[in-house]
Amino acid sequence: MQNFPFFLDCFFRILIAALCGAAIGYERATLRKSAGIRTHIVVAVASALFMIVSKYGFFDILKDTGIGLDPSRIAAQIVTGISFIGAGTILVRKAQVSGLTTAAGVWATAAIGTAVGAGMYTIGIISTCFLFIVQIVFHDDTFINFLIVHVRFNVQIEVDNVPNILNELKQILANNDVEQVSLKLINASKDRLLINVDGIIKSRKDENDIIITLEKNNYIHRVSCARG
Image (cartoon, rainbow, N blue to C red; front, side, top):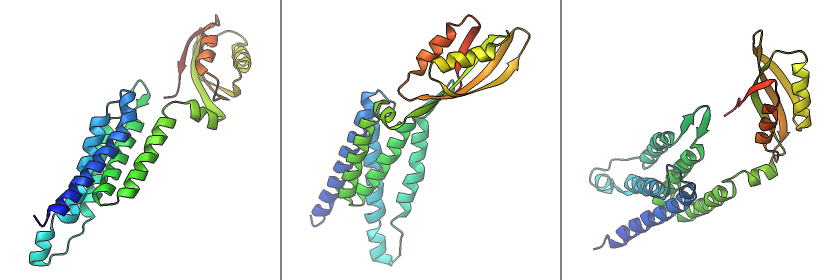
């Protein structure tokens, strides 16, 4: 029973790691992401357990043989190993990338679990609160649009090959507050042109409205986003 305080401390570390992981995973779960509360709890608890084993799991060998061991070796492997789980949450569909924030959250959860497992409760809890606030504040574009004034507007347009079509496109874009417009011809035939449009719009302006306006033009056949 002389080890009971030590076991209690280990359990306390794992419990705190689980709570920190649940807090980070909560926001992901509300958005129905692939890695939610359960995944973040498992990652945090496993990281804390790895760290506890790395620090205290070899005391019997050190005492009996005098072998010197580096307690950071397992922690270093957590940083690398957790990347495989994070990579599994990243999806690419039709040039659209999703899951980056969830992957980063899983990686950060592992770091917090490692800190708590090492007994650094304060920094682990502070990091959890900070990441939780960041995820809640930045989970949509409202606050980001407040900070960022301009964003890139990039689309590809398929139009009829008629006289002055480039000037007409520039006029339509200018009327929709697209600034610094650059038109690049990608493909040309006798009847059709494929043009890449690159410009800048204010972050508060909905680019979908611009695309809808472009598609109403009789000469335009297709408008597609050129960025992910």
